[in-house]
Length: 210
Image (tube, rainbow, N blue to C red):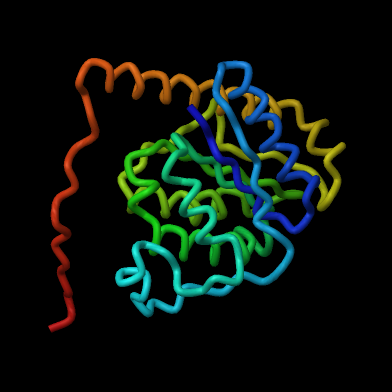
């Protein structure tokens, strides 16, 4: 079993990475393979709603970043953790653009697989940021994994040593990894007993504008 963790910060080894690293270490201790993917420092295009991915085998029409590479990786992954710093009480715009295209084009590779959101802030805006990230999961029938508190750590920008001083935050990440590992093992045990996720129904689209 494998979990992909995404670092939405332009600081490759900053506070967000430190939080993800702690969660990854907990997963590894529980026998789950992990890979932390740096979303990158370069700009990532927004989804333009062109629908080209519907005609393109579930791949985004834009091919100048890692979105299609991750869509392919997601096929074989069992769980996901998306991490972001908090900017103006919201996740990084880069991560949101990445996730919008990832889920719009490749949502089938994520559906029914457990996921979690992790954020890092100097002070505030964490719960609003968690909400924005988690909405991608809940529209895609993905079990949302929790910890013993909201999945956040605190530390000044690009100050991983401060994030490590947040002992409660580090424990939250450890427990998150344990809970993710537990759910993954439960899903695997269920499959062995012939228990699989529900079949996806054709979407009913209702427009309230008359």
